[in-house]
Image (cartoon, rainbow, N blue to C red; front, side, top):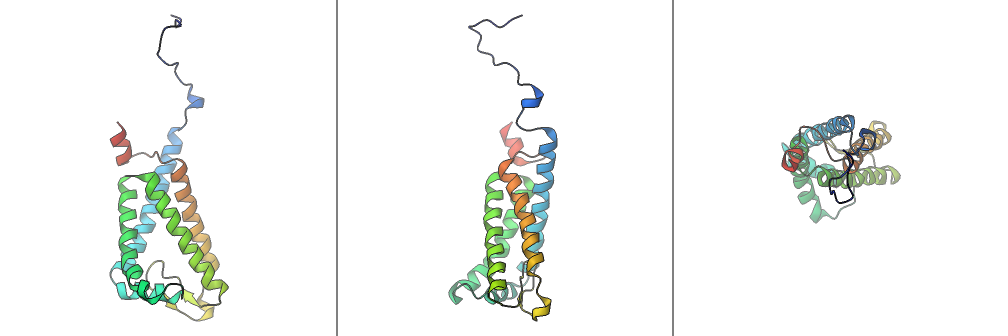
Length: 171
């Protein structure tokens, strides 16, 4: 039966025009869980030895000494919180945005150390601090973090993922 001009029911949206296809939600789920693993790994590697995490922050020679310990001690807990929120899929767009911001800070810090000729291990997954110049891997670290940044960017753009608390709350 044809719709009359007074009907308010919207016409069905053709499948080709739907904003999120099933594959994008599964791709987003993979990105979300991958980023959760990265943050979890990074946080767990640092939380056991906060003094070492603070030493890694100090090695960048960017922050005033008064901020080194609070950042070094607090960063693992932030990373673990991001991992947990991504794992359960709660606030995906916001958490992805925070992840992207943190990754940009990491990329800037690594780039700064490289540009200033400081020889350090980034401390991204534990350890950190001054190393011999032959042990630096700045380009690989920047490329790795850029890859993680792309995952976060995907989740900012398409935060709807499968198996997420956000999806459950939306229903």
